Length: 621
Image (cartoon, rainbow, N blue to C red; front, side):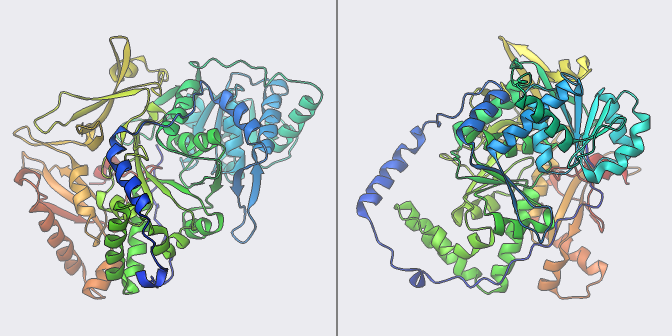
């Protein structure tokens, strides 16, 4: 839904790497008993069972449990000024604020069971507002803060919202459109103590008012009984291929995400996730917020992409939940610095040595690659990439330096997780296995086993908001099970791991009926460091019956300057990129070969999860 016309990945800064030789790290003691045990574990790896995991039916059940179990532990770390200190919010403080806010919403403002829009940057009050809705106050409607003014107004109207919770940065826009929204009873501003003035009121004021009611014996908010399968969240999809649909989610859909993730990935209260992606997206709000909340872990809120490196170093997260574009850029920047430090040969050697040692039960990767770890905060142990395919080479490199690399797959319609890599059975390149309580199958597979991915899961949405026809098109029932047409194309291996190869709506069909999936070619192109970003599509050319397979490319000028020299003209850059395309073409069957190159100077139009909005881009022609 969101269009990032000026989105640009910042220039991450890492210092020069020194990298020690193995002899400098200290004596490696060979524990033969440990080796024997490691070999035995390797044999039994295929029989590894899922973790016990959680068994929540609703988020409120999870809220009550975690608030009690982890009361004095830190939940959130937030910084309001790059030069300031990090503010820590405990589970107990958060619980009291949620109960206070929820009580005020239903007692003072009479908003129980209405629809409430939440719009703003990732901040303490966003988490607080969302959790208050999920504990029974109202139906939450998370909205993208980057939408243009008219679209924000349209979404509020489409949702039939009775209230809007907004951040200070959105105050000007909200006040500007408020006169066009007569059905909205209250506009609630985050980080504000303003008493009720007309339809405007401060969120902090409501928390205080609600807490006063609670202290006086009002338990009405916590006494609300929530039914697991009722409609409680409305999320409008990103609409990368069509107009945004409203996805209706239940309490159970969200709780099952936590249950599913904890069955495959071991997290503890000592873990800390960094929040980078926008919270209005289900990937971040479910896996980046509800999951750590359910296990008592903490969350550090990134101040923005340009602060990601200092924020990593200051808050020291153990897990990074992100998308391929960010992982690729971190990988490139780290490796560029290693190369600049003339340590690339040493690092490659150390990868081979440490892999060999790890195979016999000796894991010294954290010691050997300590400098890389320190630049990422020092405690990183898991990186999760989802929302789009990623080059397997990058995932392999992450695992080679000792960080667990996991991938997830899902859609807003599955709240969002449908598949995930178990941390005890990783397979770099795949999108993971069907989560516990879900089934995946490939519909009408071709000769390569590829077809549309069908999903049956407890995380599957109730349906599309006010669109029965679209719901019937997307969901069908078979043998008592609800199945969802994902629109994604992929295949499954013999071990049940899913591989996504494309999007059915992006497919380019040739005159003789051959299917070309752009994502497959884009992954091959992205392996060349001279190419920063790319999009492959079928270009309509007047007089031609066949679509022309075209690559639209943003060159990596920094890499090109380093390899080929400065002050290159456009023709020289074009030739460099075209030579790389010819290399890729050699690996493709003839009908998939790229026939045309377009050099792009500005940024691609993107969604909040950094997917290129293909139809917006093609329209530019």
